[in-house]
Image (cartoon, rainbow, N blue to C red; front, side, top):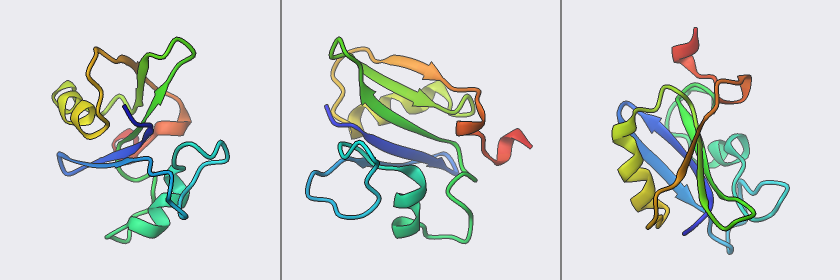
Length: 107
């Protein structure tokens, strides 16, 4: 299982499992990516990093996979997220309604 970040762009998953050899887009913790910093290196359009629905995969203190995500990401995307990040168990889903995961669909 890998930590990392993802976006759902026009119904397609754009996933970035963390690569320890990465030099760009790294979060302060050093063990995953930061959406804003990574977007500057991978964006393929003129939209800001917060435009599309996004989320993060992490591991809690019990070793369980946790997926934090925009409430606009549909359940049908969970299987692709699990595959992209090597999650083999049922992950905890944390839909985040805060400002942190707002996107164009919240306007």
